[in-house]
Length: 231
Image 1 (cartoon, one colour):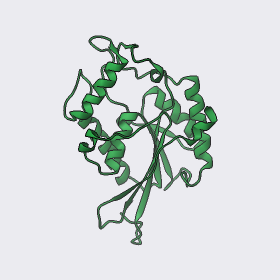
Image 2: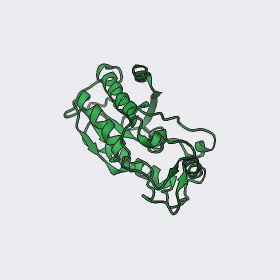
Image 3: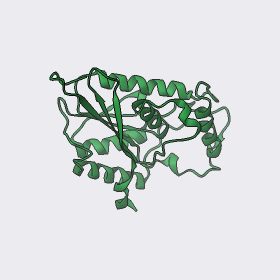
Image 4: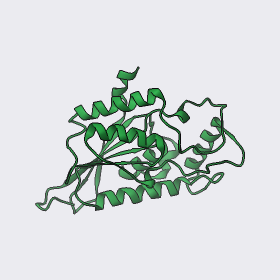
C-alpha cells in the first residue's frame, strides 16, 4: 500500500493492556467461580490509566497525531476494565473509544463447572499456548483467539486511511496481536512469551509499499515509564 505517489505507508499500532483491575490482585489460592468480564479497575488502576493518558498526550514521539480523517483511532475490548481504561485515554487524546468484541480477552465460561484456584487458571492458560488447537474446560483455544486478532488487524489495514490505532486489550489478546503484526509463528510459544503488564505499552510500526511483504518494527515493548508517577 502506498499513498498514491509510490511512497510506502506506515501505520502505527499502540497496544495497551488495561490498567490494574480487581481480578489482577487475586492471590494464587483465591477461587474463581467463572470468568469475570465485569471486574472494574482498582484505585491504583485508575491512577495508572490517568498516568498513561497524561504521558501519551504529551509524548509526541509515540503519539504523533490527532483524531479525524487520516488520524488515529481508538479501539477497545468491551470488557469493563478495558473500557474504563480506554475512556480515560479517549478524554486525554481527543479520540472516541469504539468497542470491538475481537479485542476481548480469552473467551471462557461465565461460570466454571467447579471453582478454579487462580493458580489453576494460570496453568490452563499455559496449556492453551502449548497446545494451540485445543480447548480446555470450555475456554477458547489459542488458535481461535489468534484468528480473531488476525481478522481485526486485517480489517484495520484494509480500511480507510489512518495514521494508526490505539488498541486497549488484555494480556493474552495483546500477545496474539503482537504475533500477528510481527509475523511470528506459534512455535515461538514453546520457548518465549511477551511480558504484558497493566498499562504496559507496545508500539509496532507496520509498513506496506504495495510490492513487497509488509515489514513490521517493534518500536517499544511493554513500556511502563508512566507508572513512575503511581509508585
